[in-house]
Length: 208
Image (cartoon, rainbow, N blue to C red):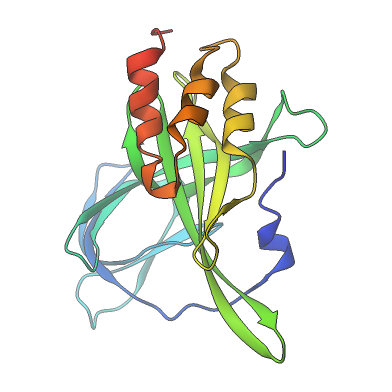
């Protein structure tokens, strides 16, 4: 299994700050309503303003329980924090976990849950630099407090990169739900369909 190798091969670029209406729920029970800059992959703080022209406040990830925003389509997006990881390349039955939590978008929650995290990088083509937008997807098994990588969607490509969805499902669910990987393979999912992973599991795998 590969880690997010794309992040190491492409040079990160500075994003222009963009704030969306939303609210933050802090661990201590405080609720903050205003404008939020959605964190990118590996960000350890979230930026918040009471109004669009207000002063920026920063909250470290360990103080944040969850947050939600209104996106450009006026849809509500929900986010939480969780430890992320990936199956080891030479010991695929083992999962290497990050030492700190990450901010993740909730794609769908159930007995298992699917999350994503966004990142933007630059790469070179000829004599020019260009931006690459990507979403990394992660899956959380029942009764676990971490999620592992299941693939990366690069906006400039028509195929997924990173780990192979079918193989990573097969490895991580072979004892929990042996036929789950075959069902995922038959579904032929793309990144827009990853919420269906939760539905397939709910309908086909017995509860732990």
